[in-house]
Every structure is written in C-alpha cells, then in structure tokens.
Image (cartoon, rainbow, N blue to C red; front, side):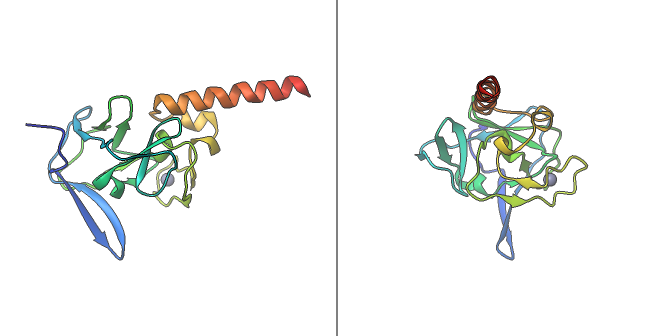
Length: 160
Ligand SMILES: [Zn+2]
C-alpha cells in the first residue's frame, strides 16, 4: 500500500471549524502520508507549513490539521512525511505541534487543548522558552533559528 496518498484522511467541518481525522489506525512511527511540496511560498499563511528558512509549502488537505500541545502526529520536513507520534486509533482527530515547523506564525491564537503542558499562546517557536521547545519534536530549520537567536543574544550581551 502506498503511504504517499491522503486517502486515509477525512476533513470534517463543524461551525466552520475544520478537523482532520483518520479512517484507519496507525502504529507509532508509521508514515501516514507525504507532505505536499509542489506549491511553495516565502511567506506563511493559514494553509502553509514551514519546511525551511523562508520556505513554506501549501499542504492541501493537511491544512485542516489542528494544533495540540500533546500531538499525535509529527510533520517531518526533512523527509516530507507525516508520521504517527504515538499509536492512533481509527476515527481519531490528528494534531501536530505547530511550533515544530513554524518559527513565526501569520495568525497566532490561544490554545485550548487542555494538555498539562499547554503553551497557551501559539505564535511560533521563537516565542517559546527553550525549555518548552526541548520537550517537543523539532525540525532542523527550527533548531537552526534557535541557535541563531542564542548566538545573537550572546553578541548583545557582550556589547552591554
Ligand atoms: Zn495547548
């Protein structure tokens, strides 16, 4: 069976709020589908996922993926795959941790996921403490930005 299609995923809409659910179960680590990369832009919007520095891709159906601070999927932008982060049951809604791909989001919002580790304000990785980020799966471009931010901070401190 091909893992590249999104046939196993369903978008549900209720009161204009979209959710993405799965029609089948997945085991932790299993590839669910490819992340589309045909339609790139250098600015983020609600329908894009960041896959590199100033590089954002329109993700089609995956734009219906909601954020959770306790996610069940990851978007691996190095291999361009959506992967199960834990065992997932048939019919479950899929969520990923937005700051794992997004450095600075176009449309920040308040998270109501109810997780014990909820970050509350979802605005991108640059607005989160390192101690919070380190608890999550992070893509290489987010790590790069973090290192850059730390180095800049060091420069500013030595200039004081
Ligand atoms: Zn949350």
